Image: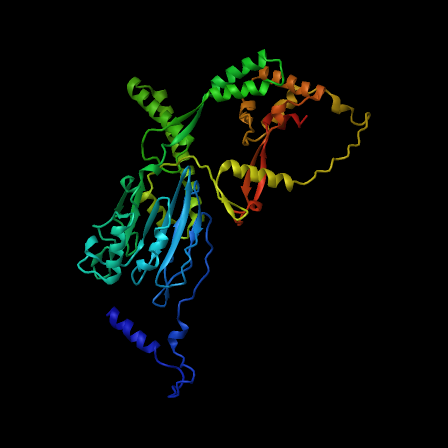
Length: 499
């Protein structure tokens, strides 16, 4: 019934609305089908996604080619140099991840891949190459009962090249009639084939193609790490430093050393932690388990109440972290539910520390070395820095005599309490450290601030700051002028300016 209705609709929509002429030079007759064609829309490509132009398959828009890379990697498109061909599209991306460089080639050939036109491009790379896509080739080498001249040429090239085919058994395409075939192939450089594993997913995610999951042991996700800070020990040792250290210049360096010595990076056990798992979730989970064991062992009502308390807090932080992660996903995809489903299938739920490194274009060359990038940013920000005009001060001794009053402990305490916990400077001393100081420690800090005010001497460490380039929204991240600087200054220096 569905097929019959579709055919009737096609016949009706194909009837002309104007007169037909025998003269071939006359204009073509207008039909209803001319007014119900698909409308091509424009889409905004998100950051960290390399997208090729949309393909056209048999007169209708296809899915196109897309290569997405994580935030902690960088990449650039390699021009293929092929003439425009709607029957064969190739997208090559050079990826930089830590100290590894490799090529990812994504291709789509609806009429079958013609290896003669691309084999020199494939063989031209000297670094590891991954090639995958919809080849649309049939050959007994990967389980088909027939072959074609294009597939024979491809197999001949594959046997004489430095590439190896890794999937040759499980079908990757399921037709609406129920038949299955292997059309999506994955090949890689022979030098890395021993460390590469691939398998076909059991779920097609509402598509007619089953995705191929590829893992490379060299790029295995590092174990999840969190920062553990012994704040009580830091504050006790800091109090000793404040009492015994009378040299203002060495004060911040001693406190920074205490904070570094009592800050540890803990590697979590090898478990499937969700990507949104953070330090709060980890700590409250440990407290929940601890007091549950104590309550069961000692049969203590107070321990059981603490277990219930930390269970509620753990539930709150899990909901907060997962919602924040979900909002982030919704911003980078138009179908977040499907995207999240794919992540749950293929992502191993580890979240390594993000250290975003983007390629910077300079003099027609891409710079990936962090040190060279830092020098480029330093030169650019210094050349384009604005000249600050000095603010004229109308100082009157009679009117502004209160400015010379000594700094009081209450002033310091109020300024510390209203300061938000922002990112610390180069010395690593946070505003939270100041908020945990006792009255005795605050008295020592007040005397140090008074010394700065009286002697007009500012320690050298207070003058140092970390300049972080922040990309401007909707700007090309490969251009150096698409960034603005943010200075992370010492919290000591921030407080000293308040008095």
